[in-house]
Image (cartoon, rainbow, N blue to C red):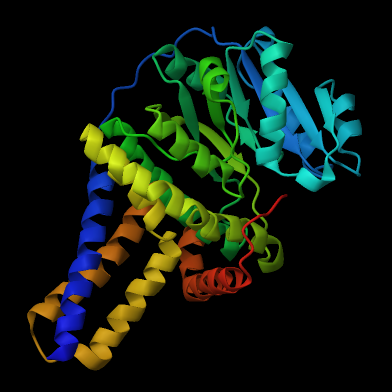
Length: 387
C-alpha cells in the first residue's frame, strides 16, 4: 500500500509531462500556409566566432559565400578568438573579413559576442546579425527565409539546426533523434502558438534594434539559453524558422562529444535558479502561458535523461509495485507507451533513415553515458567552459 502511494503520484506526474510534450507536438503538426518569399532587403552581417578552426572554417566560408542571396546585402566576419593555428590565414585567403581577438583568459562564444557587437554597431549599417558556429553550413535559401520572417515582424529568429551526417555513427544518429524531438515536436509547436522558442547557439539572427537596446552580456556556457530568457522577460519573442535550415558537424567519438554534451546537459541548470522564479512571476503578472513554457524548458532535463528517469521509475514499479490489474498498472503502461510513441513520432517527422533506426540499439548505452556526464560534472561543480 505504501508503494502504491509512491508510484501513483509519480505516474501521474510523468503523464502530465507527456501531456505537455504531446500538446506542443500536436500544435506543431497543424498545417501551415506556404507564403511566397519576400524580396531581399535585409542587410546581414554573418558573425562566425572561431577558435582554432583551421580544419573546418574553409568549407564553412565557401558554403556561406555560395548562398542564394545578393552579395551586396551580406558580409561575413570571422572573429578569430585567440587562435594559434592557421584559422586567420585561411579566412583572409578566402577574401573574408577577419577580426583577431586576443584575450586567452576570456575565450568563448559569449565573450566573443560581447566584444564584437559594439564594434559591429559602429562598423557598418547592417540591419541584422546572424551568428554561426565555425562548423555550421547554411541551406542555400537560409538568408532569404530569415529576410522574409524579419520583414514580417520577427525581431529575433532561430533557424532549424540539424546534424549534418546522421547516419555515419550511432552518436550522430542519436543526436539527430534528439534534435528532431526538440525542433520538430516542441519548437514548431511554440512557433505556431506565438510563444518564444529556444536560441540554439548557431543559425540565430538578431535585429539591429535588439542589439542596440540589450547588447550582449551573457557569457555563461549556455549564453544562448540565458540570452533567450533575458529577451523573453523583456517581451521579445524568439521566432523559430523551421524553413531556414543549417547543419552542424558533431564529433562521432565519446571523448570529443563530451564537451558538447556537458554544455547541453549541464548548462541550463546553472541558470535555472536565476530565471525560473522570474519567468513564473512574469507569467502570472501578464497571464501569459509562454512564460510557464520557458520555465518548463529550464526545469525539464534533456530528453535522454528524462527517459532514463522514466525507465528507472517504471522498472521499480514493475519490480516492486505491480499487484495485478490496478490503476497504477494502467498509468505506468501509458507512461512507457507514451514515451516510446513520442520517440517514434519524432523519427517519422524528421524522415529518419534506416541507419538512424538501427542506432536505437545503442540508445541504452547513450543514455547511461549522458547520465554519467551529468553526475560527473555536477560533482565537479564546473560551471564555466569555453571552446
